[in-house]
Every structure is written in C-alpha cells, then in structure tokens.
Length: 217
Image 1 (cartoon, rainbow, N blue to C red):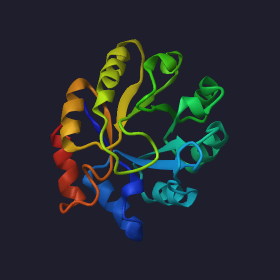
Image 2: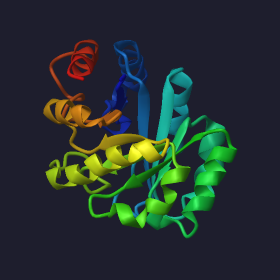
Image 3: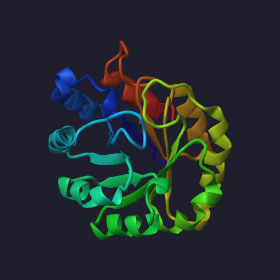
Image 4: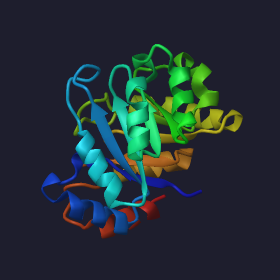
C-alpha cells in the first residue's frame, strides 16, 4: 500500500519558499501540509492566507490545511475556494462538527478531523462514518520541535483496526522521525506529516531524503 509523505510547510525555509516548494515537489512530495492557527485554540500563529495561496499556485500536488482554530466552519469556504484539497479541523473547536464535515464535502473537498494526544476515540466515534482522513497528533498542537508522544500509538492502532468498518485513512503529525515512519507504517498508517524530525534542516537534499523515507515504508 502506497504511503503519503506530507511536508509540514511551517518548517520550510521562507526566505526561498518558491525553491523549497519546487524541490519538495520534484523529490516526490504527495501532499503539502499547511498549518493555520489563530492564537486562541493554540497559543501560537501559523502560516498566513498568502502563504497558502502561494504554495497552492506553486504546485499541482495535493495541498491540505490543518485548522487549529476556533469556529473552523467559518473558514471552510475560504480555503476550499483557494484550492485546499483536504481540510482538517479539531472537532472540539466546533459546535456542530458533523455539519462542518458535510460543508467541506459539499465543496467537493476531502474532510478530515485532527485529534489531540489527549482526545479519546469514544469522543469522535460518531464522526467516523463522515470523514475521509483522521490525523492523529503525536505532539500537542501549536508548536514545532516537540518530543514525540509514544503513548498515542495504541490509539493509532485502534483507529487503523476500525478502518474496516469505515472509509477513512489514518495520518499522523508531530515529531515523526524515520524510525516512527517505519514502525507506524507496519501498523497501517497511510500518511506522515514531516517537519524537522525527518525532513527539514538536514544536510541531505529533499531529493535524497524523501525517496529514502518512502523506501522505509
């Protein structure tokens, strides 16, 4: 089964963003991952609308957006119209998450939920028939460079097991190292959002790193 490599563009070199996107694209990136934060749901600010618009225009690959914000439904149409292929949000930030998932799909986009390390599967079980992707956070959301939280892995395994009853794919995001990729791919995880633990800020080029990571799958 093909696995997806998804660079977290928050970790890219913004002094040469055009070159970064081109190099990542040519190296075999599957999905460009863009974090959007409001400074309320998480105590930080991520990338801006202009960053999203630039990356969307610079590649024909899939682009997702991870909404770490309150009231994400208010932004679904904006990001859908700007060209997001997949829209993730955290269900606890939305009074009517099922309606927001339907809104994403009604725009012809893939609907995803992001679940935090402390979020139990039981709290989102009613949404499982409605999602295309579940992105499990393996760090607490809002900051790059945090340590990987291995205690989340049983939850990942359970979500993979539940796939037989639904139609979603399991993704992971947060301090994903090559060793974690190898381990979780054996469990059945589909996609890996990658930052500084495996992809950015390395001596090797993206053209070397991404094929190696895909080879580890």
